[in-house]
Length: 193
Image 1: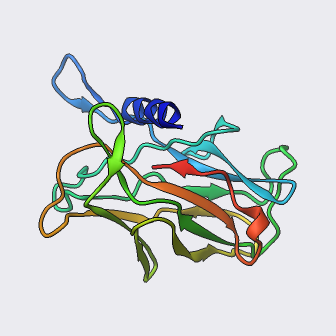
Image 2 (image 1 turned 90 degrees about the horizontal axis):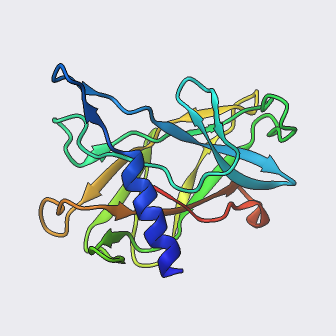
């Protein structure tokens, strides 16, 4: 499992890089959102670009770059969550008014140079007045979604909280699982921001 997580860290780091053009302007990387597909009643995570175009049927690592807004140096609102009532022929529609929920699956992790350790920092996830902080072990989240068409495109606010001050710079790993509210068997495999 440790080698698997190291592989996730490398992928996560690679997806959040941006580069400078020869003219000196920084080019923004193309980000993608977590896409929730219904596969036999279970949430399966894939990815879609912000313009809703298809990226991957299976994706479990999503880059979240803190501090893109200098006024909020420890916050991000990417990646988002997406699902569609008619998933372009994939045959995995969500019913109208489907309500999702999530769990933070583990203590927030921080990269130590060769693997991940439990972090002293915590991660807050908030959306439309609901909020939850990571803690020790698994923490239950809150419900979201429920549109009449079965579609979803939400962006939660992620905020890294320091232990008694500003958080340390680093690469953090937030484990998540999403399911349909009230159906424990529907939860996805663990995925990572």
